[in-house]
Structure formats: C-alpha cells, structure tokens
Length: 65
Length: 453
Image (cartoon, rainbow over all chains, first blue to last red; front, top):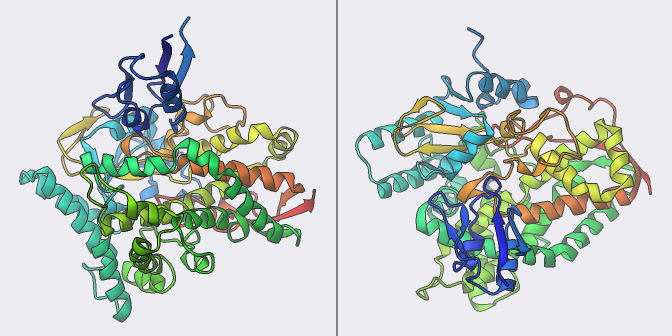
C-alpha cells in the first residue's frame, strides 16, 4: 500500500531530517525545503518515522485510499 | 513624508520595551527599511523573511551575534565583494571578523588573563553552525538534528520533569519569588548542561541566562570579556576544552562523548574546534532563549487572568499557549544576514555585502499572516506558523527540546499552585526591566506571588 505524503510548503523550514534520513522518498529543493520524490521508495515505517522527525510537523502521512 | 522609524537596532529602552510600533512603521514603508544609523536593512514581513532565509544569497555572520561592529563588518564585507572575493574568502572574512569582535582585537588590549583566555577561546571556536554555510554546515547540522530528533526528545521528558520538580520544590514554598533566577533560567540551563555533560556542581558558574551581552550594542566588548572571563562563557569554554580530552579516554553518557565518538563518512573524527563550536552554541542557545520565552509567557498570562483560568481548566491548551507566546513575544526578535550578491527585496535594491536584520518578532505580528496579530489568543489555530525559531537551514535545532521544557514548566507551575499573581508595579511593558539587546527580547526580572495548590 502506498502512503499519501504531503508537505506543508510554508511550514517546512528546511531542517533536512527527512531527506537526510530517507533520501529514497524525500528530496531537497534548491532552497533546502523538502519535496516528495517516490512515495513508495521506502518501507512505510521509515516514512512515518521521517514524518515524526520533522521539528515543524510539516509532513503529513495518510493511507492512500 | 512620515517620520523615519526608530528601529530596534538602536536598542533604546522605549523601543525594546515595545518594538512592535517600530516594526509596523517599517511595514507601512513596504517591509524593508535601511536604518541610516546602522546601515542595516531591517526586514519585517513574514514572507520576505522566510524567502531570505531559504536563499543562499544571504549568509549568517557569527560576529553579528554580538552586534558590536556592524558598521565595520558591513563596510568590509562590501569592499571585499566589490573586489570579487570568492566564497572561501568571504567565509574566511566572516571568521576573522568574529574573532576580532570576540577577542576585542580591534580595540585596546583586554587586561591580563582575560585577553589571554579570549584569544585562546576564539582560536578554538571557528564558526561551525551559525556563521557557517554550505555542505560543511549541512553535515554538522545533521549531527545536531540527530540529538534533538523528536523521538529522542520524547525520551528526555522524564529528565525535564525531574529538573522542573526539583526547582519548584525550592521555588514554591516561600509563596513568592523572582521567576528568572528561581525557575525560568535554571530549567533550560540545567537541562542543556546535563546533556552536554557539565557536572551539576560546576553548572551555576556557566549559567548565562542572566547575561546582557548578546546583541547589546551598548556593551563594551573589552569590559564584557573581562567581566565574564572567570565565570561565564570563557569558563565554560575552558571546561569544555578539558572535557573533550577527558572523554576521549573516559567516555560517558553525554554530548561531549557523543561528539568525540562521531565520525564523518570517511571515518575521520570530528576536530576538537568543531566540537567546541557546536557545544558552545548549545550552551548559549539552550539557556537564554527558553528562559526569555517563559518570562514573556508568564508575564502575558498574569496580565490576562482569563488565560491563567483557561490553562488551569484545560492544561491541554498549554502547548498552543507556548506557540502563541513565541509568536506574540518572540524571545529572539531578529538575526542578521549578509548579502553575498547584488539583489533586491520587495523592490529595494540590496547591494552585495549588505547587512540585513530579519525581524522574527515582527513576522509574528504580520497582519498578512495572522488575523488581528496584536491580540494574544491561546486558541489561535495558526500560532505555530511564527518565525521565532527562525527558518531555513539555520532554523533553531533545539526547538523540539525548547518546546518540551516550556510545556513542562508551565504545566508543572500551574499544577502545583492555586493562583499566580504579579507583584504590583509590573503591569505594563514600560514598567518592566528589559535586556538591552536587539537580538534577544526578554524581561530581566519578574516578581510573582502564588498560593499553594
């Protein structure tokens, strides 16, 4: 099952924990903020942990319907 | 034409007590204003500050944390860039200015031992996080992010609660006290020093939450370096320097040991001066910012009794109350950036080598971002969108720990008291004693009274 991952573009401060730890899914933009690359690029629990790692709580992960 | 705004850069007491009208004046002018007295561009709009912090055209400058030689830094940065300096030369320049300012090298010699210490310390403390940029910064930043990963901070909750309990056991019984020295200061100071690995017996010597030094343009650097040499910042650096060597042979469960054991991808250890730079940053950044937030939040709560009643009735509102405090009364009112290229912001041309002051405190009051921004509303849904922790690659790495400390501090002091009141005579912003900083904003002393729970 593929997760639905959304990043709040304004809240994302570019701390980089998500793309440093799960580069298969999260990709840095030129300005250091994060964007979603391949949402199925890593196991679900790793993606959920990356979302939880965001100090800004800018990443939301839901089950894709 | 209206009168030119009297900006916070001057650190005049009346502006520091209530900086928000001065920000509003700059906002009226379009959001960017070059303060002619300091040759610094003050930026007040939420969207502009966000954009600048995401851009690599603007870099951090360690020296401006101390803010003493703004003129000098701006002029020299300008002339270097006009001369076509490359990135490495600019970084070298930033380190050099930092050393000059911190060591008092541009002024008369600091007397005796203090100067010796100052020289030794700056030589061991190059810019590592704030003041550094590029790949090296990102690498060091990830070390730090790992320590303050929200999962890790969750594990620290019992530790924060234990410190809080211990402090309140002493602070509460007399029924009255001064908040900064009794609770708001020591809570984050003990926590960060416990993490770093400073023994409890030494910690009070390294408390810096009461220092009025950072971002204070009135301070005489030589005098300040001399006066704090034996007790504060320099003492910590001396301890740390010894601790790094000690932990290489006697590992413990602390951040000095973690850093000593950390390896870069190629297997090389982290140099001692980098460890010094990172942990010194944490010792300063981990104390006074959180302390000031608790002071500002407590004052706001006590001047609006309905807020205290609501938080007592429903403690689950405390985290958003903390966010609203950060938005409404930011403890870091702003930070400096240096432009590395000719650019423009909101139509204002910014030459390469200009200093900018990004007013985080003003961003929290931006009406384009927050409805009725001057109203303190603990139910505000978007409170968390403040810029009190900065933004971009230099966003405060300790924000998750700071939030834990603030939430725990307010929860516990409310739970263990029946009512908290201000000692009369502290009801207005102008009546309060403020730190003399245009970087930090906080109440120096707050006298409160409380009933037992």
